[in-house]
Image 1 (cartoon, rainbow, N blue to C red):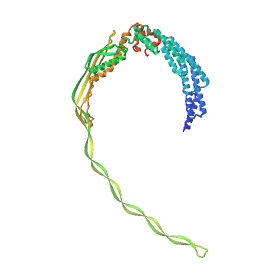
Image 2 (cartoon, rainbow, N blue to C red):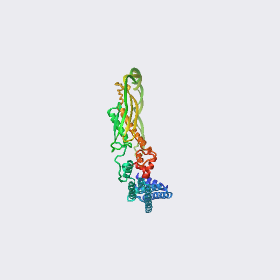
Image 3 (spheres, rainbow, N blue to C red):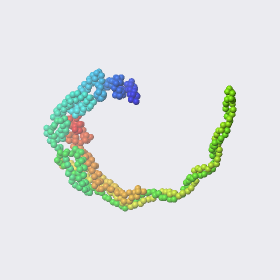
Image 4 (tube, rainbow, N blue to C red):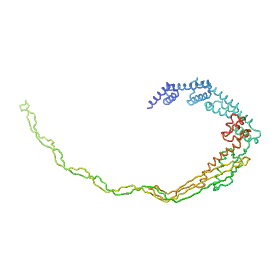
Length: 490
């Protein structure tokens, strides 16, 4: 069977090669060689198929260079190098020479690309571009020094950039100093930063009261608000200042009950007596005539020869012989057979009748209402903001102890939610609204100007990218260049 399989695979490989499908041919020839390493013809064909693939990719590289499609150049060259490494086969000396020349060109282009980005004051973008080209090409050459050389150049430039950007007095422009600090720390360059930025808090102090809220519910509310602030621009665990959260509102639940009679349908099977006919078997005897065979004796005469007594002649004569034969006879006999007769007998049968099972129960209802407002004040010369949540819910259930399996009735409990449990359901929404309100508040406070200083623009950059105004970006672009769109991800 192995020989048949190999033969079929070999035929497929030959067919693919003839059709110009060198990828398929190389894959199948490799399997043939794996099954029979002594197959020199398959080895030769495998080398030819791979050579065709290398030549095709080198042709794609050359054509892409001619048309100026640099991305396609790197893509094709990367695929060529990936094949050579995966196959552990760099190709013929001519292929290796052409590949070496293309890699040298690619390394030169990578240096030019990164240099152009550094000229635009964008070491972050240069670093990203180098990583992308490394994944495409350079990683296939562990001995290449191009990546380390360019990396050193990027870091040297970034160090110079950091010295230029770092403010002489970080306290006078704390947000810009912090942005520069994050930027430079990525390149392992340390710059002076203020320990804690203005308007940042590290804890929540809860004031006020919500009617109907337990102490545990109050603590849970404070935790929910804190989680929301932790996801906002106002939070810094190093800060000493608290957020004063003054809460008001209500958390009410009203419960009622009423007695009721419930019913469930069921079907009863009632037995009754009936007569049914059935077939009873019995033995029936009847006369019959049967044939049998009897032995009969009879005499026949046979001819025989004997000497006539003169010693010369033979005489013929007859003699009687006794024989037997079977002669058919008939006789009267009595036989038996199974017969059936109809009889009746009493049986128990069932009929189904609809019934209703009635039982006493208590319906319990709960009506829940929460309406709470949190006034959040940072006490640092900025206006406070509010978070509001209002929600209602109604629920009901049945209590009873009845059990009647035929009707599918078993004891039940309403298990209505408690007032505190309903409150806990609201806390994820409180957290989410706190975060959204805090972001909106930061934008309203610090991102609504028509003009910005460097520190004001950096302060505005503490909100999500979609909420940053173009005017703030334009100011920071003058300092960070195109890197400004990537600084905040660090």
